[in-house]
Amino acid sequence: AVEVTDFNGSLITVSSACHLAFSGLTFDRHLARGITCSGATNVLVQGCTFRNLGGYAVDLAQRPACGRVSCDLALLAAGGILVRGGREQAPRESNDHYVVNNDIRDFAQVVPVYAAGIDAGFGGMAGGGGGGGHAVGVGTRIAHNHVQGTPHGGILRDSFGKTIEYNRVEEYCMISGDLGGLYSYQRAEQGGEEVVRYNLFSAPTNYLYPTYLNPGPTG
Image 1: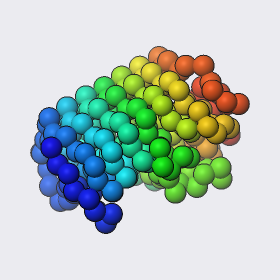
Image 2: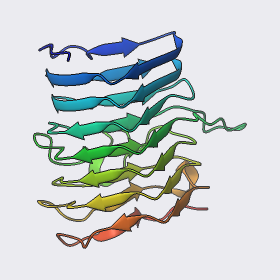
Image 3: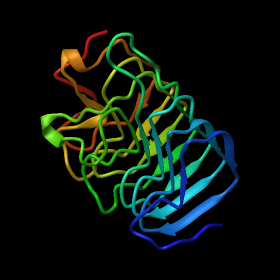
Image 4: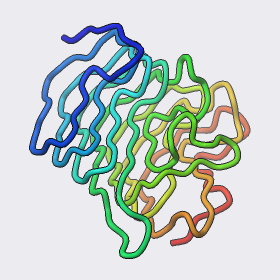
């Protein structure tokens, strides 16, 4: 287990590295993020536990093919997994990140809005809120995750080329509404070409929709 109380940085920051794996670790009681991957390629976080963190458990940014597989996240002050990277301008480039088979529950306990279990291209807690968040996040696969227990949204998305499938989202928008289990605020020029299929959303808690794509993407 790793326990460090520090507002200023992640417990682990991976930069300018490749072909690394973090497996079977527990990250507990820290005031900032768990793992940040920036400028790193082919970094795998597998079978780890993240709890009692002040920031996102994992931040996958910029360089391609980093993943989060079969991890447990719980009791988080903010969101769970933040995914960014790729290139939106032609020729478009995928980040090839993947978020697969994770259990994410009881998050956004201090930051109650726009701190999602999985954020892929929305931009995080400061992503813009009701005016629409946007960050470059091209080509991520989000699949077979269980997301449960949040005052606001379960999965936030924006940008291009993601596949979102076989996820289960429950107990979302337990305090505030006008959002959804899967939410985006996406202008036509900022995103599209995405696959959303075979997901299960529990009944809405407040005035909202299980999937709320606002004002509506293309593709």
